[in-house]
Image 1 (tube, helix red, strand yellow):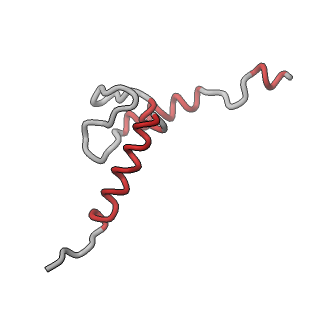
Image 2: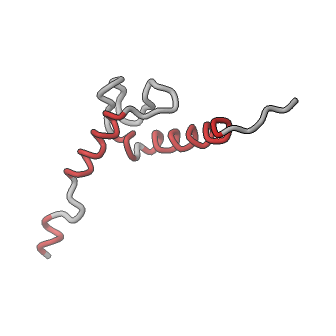
Amino acid sequence: MPQPFTASTITDPILDGLYETLRLYQHGPFSVRCPDCHVGPGELCLARRAVHRARRRAYREKLAAVELVPLLAAAA
């Protein structure tokens, strides 16, 4: 008898692919070091199918510190 589809069976491969792509190109939270599991940028967190909250927070703090238009370009 075939197994019924659940949200987990559908979304797990999608999340795995998304996380692997983000990890490979060091985008989003995968561009910073994880303060919880201490893995470097470009590595997956040790928790399977999860990105630690502290890593997401560190990424948002890094993003907030970056100026979208550098001062030299703004002065021109």
